[in-house]
Length: 274
Length: 272
Image (cartoon, rainbow over the protein chains, first blue to last red):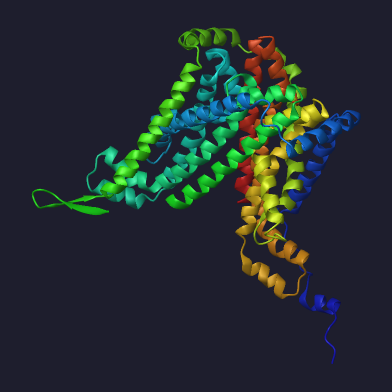
């Protein structure tokens, strides 16, 4: 006796099984696809690419790749070292100050522990800080405070506040109420309640986020120099302008290595605190 | 946690032993010293006269910058469209590049943990650690200024971010589904399409929208180095000190960022 063929099985079982798609409604799916296609055609047509220029540039691209394989750390060693130290110093100072300021703002932006007026004020500080990119803040601060690392330091501190306070506030809002209530039930003051009921629950996450933010601050500090706010960016920009790709490659490699080290450290520390 | 006997015979509880407290105290000391050193260095590199003068300068700039020059908006529609294109096309290209990298980097799908995975991880780290403005600088030197350089800069910069989140999602998939497909005799590709992809598709869509939101922010400033978009107008206005135009551009950027965030939040809310 032979078994039924595939088509006979289909008839027996009913409709053929199809993979369910991500968007359930057919109408919405086709509408979105059509809209996306129209947009893509319009967008791609509006981008002017001068292929001859790209072709010419390939040469320089190849040179840059070669420079990456053979970076020059020595010719501009002093500039690189000074820029790097300035970047690192800005990162450290801005992270410390930014984290210190974002803790009270984060507390104030958590709806379950802050009264409404405080909540609104803190949330608007966070919104402003998150909406403005670092580089724009840096331009304004350079215009106000003059060139130098102070503008970069202030920029990074300001950006840290938006990032860290928001995530800290969300962590506090999703904390376990039972523990906090237990501490409150012992008759604690507000400061004791925060210190023993809330802080132990959020501190591992706060440490993890802080280290992540140090990492981001360092990466951002590399571009602040483009607008005169101190750090390695100025050296990097000069290297690009003078087509010294080997020096630029050396700087980029140093940045990559430092970011990798920071990421490794943050992994180790996060594994320890959690 | 230890208890100490007090002089009066009662026990006192402390959280840490004396040794632990010493180590912590020393750690704080080093930390404070580093911070003070950092602050001193910054302070030495600062012209403090400018800082004391800052409130006046800030007031002066604010006075010049308000009210925004609303009529300038006519010249901004083109750059706004360019900015949107840089962000969107850049994100799309980066996703095409990030998916293979993510599959090569995930422990459970990589063909070789010894050779290919480290390379994929290196791509992720190096694209992620260099800011899009630096990529733009580099690409402008190579392919010339314009929107195209911006798109490529955003695309390269986003690879690392998307691939990292995606490979973490791939590593967290439910292995029983993969096993079930393998048990039906599915080939490697079939296991991929029916066992792995459906599990990571929501994460993928979320990552794509999330990155698009970030790219909207980043593409607004790419013009500062000449890579097209509204940043070009910003830099031109800054160079001629046309503060009312700067204010208007900043407002437009602010609106764009808020809309981008709103769209991304809506879409992610719908997916998850």
